[in-house]
Image (cartoon, rainbow, N blue to C red; front, side, top):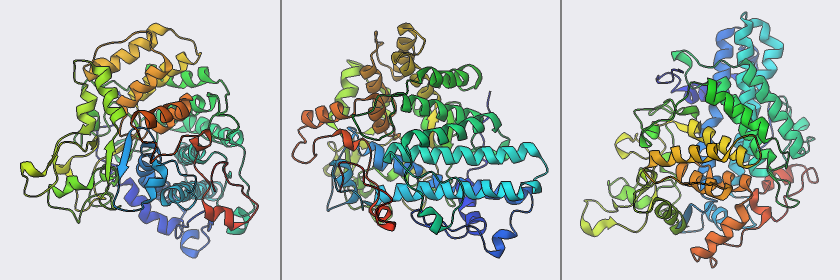
Length: 519
């Protein structure tokens, strides 16, 4: 059994942010990367300890990863509907606007992921030139594998959000970066797969107490399986997005099977405990982003929380998500999904993931109790708050064991070897934990709706819709069913990806072209 119930590495991103200033120099926006050429940097990679700190710092850009999945994934999907007090960046994302090239969240995800790639590339470059300063070849290989895992994760995030992106294999001078065009999605995937195969072969299966939170070989295998699964799906017309119709479902399932049979992970019997502040790094967790209050708190638990919720605690100025007094209600369609699936029973995932009753004024009185504006609360525990809205001491789960089980079922429904009996058994295992009745003859749309309920608030819904080929039909059906056609534009196949940020198009005119459907 993998021992992940340890506190260490909770400060991994905090340490990383500090070390980055030494090992990499100042972080840069966009693709204008500055190599580590100052005296302090040249004197840094002299021993194993230096490299340990530098590799840790390569994790630092994961700090923004949860927010990216919520604002560009959960917000984009049929799970959330918003009402705001002004013109906010996320409104265009929600409303399927074609004018998003300067939207902060779209620009920020591009910048953050490429900064993470730069950090990983810098360490990889130094392993080539200074790797001899690490006497233990196993440790040296592990460092390279960690950075290649991270680089693959950042690139997979990019290819799912933007489609074609430039492949940057080393820490380049700005003048060199300006000559690198966007690569075909297939080439980006080849690069990702190569990194993940190396990572899976060279990362350990577990770590000691001092290093819990680093990527394991199981994390690499899980991500590799998801990469195969995503690229296997049929694309949306001529859109150069993340789907290639490669049909590699058997390859994907092989990765998932390895985790299921050898990984030592388990299916927790109690759904809420997966996300408990007192049960982090539990047996469900394959890879998560580590956070610790006071040094490296998380902002994501309060991102899609109605700001009026915090009014009930008298802390209006300290909490909320920082984007005004908006509300981020779960959709009527999502509520109906829970109730329609559960029948007479109550789905435990509903009550664990969505808050229905809360006070919106202080002191708490019946007149200030909100019973209509429901929102996602899966990772929210006000009693565990830090000092400000960006200081929540809870890890963000990137991949968990239940996801692997359901992705294997998806592979079978897509044509990989397996039976309908297995698919139904996995789905019913998940449903039994939720306290709802079993189903039979599960189809791909049924599986995706079950995933919707299982992973609500975890940022997976949008990518699930895109990967399943259901994004256009499902989104348009939701817009119609919730009568939102006056505010949300029709979903088009071009919108399965986001636009390239305007600053990237202007950096070297003609190097990039904009994704179709955007201006």
